[in-house]
Image (spheres, rainbow, N blue to C red):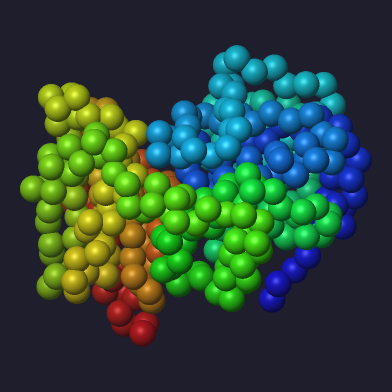
Length: 328
């Protein structure tokens, strides 16, 4: 059931002041697109704003209009500023910005993760929507602020990236109602969708060339995985920030319903991206390893060598697959 923004939040937003928007660690299209669209909304209402994040702006999202990220080490929280966590599923997902957020006198949360523990003083959490960008779009409507072309680009980025370009099970009619509004606001759909889903940076293609030979398909062809070692990154001059989307090459294999991509960040640190096709889900697997996410798209970091991580993730996916099959 679709719900309107909380009146308490709307009342606060109508009183212009200063706000700091917080993205989650290793920011993606939803947290960045939603934060920038919210920033544009607030500026239109007379607010002074900043956006902080533990992580850099991914190169492939460099087109987001006017987006500027502040590093927590170089940022001083303005007095009486409202801190707004945007698409942040839990306090630890703030990373190195958590202390800044907690220091604010006013702390709000806008998020679409059902597992969110409501760590703000005002919490607008809708676990059944496809992306936090949908909630920001509802804010525009509730506050009767027209969408600019720039805001449309940001909200499309949020929505399309968190729905896998509208293929995840969470996609519903509101997504396409929202898209109609974004198109009316001047969204250059062909241009932005090509950047997001078709264009590949040279570094990404080189990463694929190194990674694809690692392909493993197990459990009667239902689970597939890829991995990249720290040594491979170093020897080939590859950028670990260019890994977004590699896991899709595993989940897109015919017959596969669960997939993983592991890339080594340190001798005992491996980042895992997990995917599933409906009705299967991988969020519970991610939580088992201290991570989280959505039913069909989740992630975590494993404190172990790469070879061990491959074994443990495969075992966990096999177990989850069998358990979910028995409940079909």
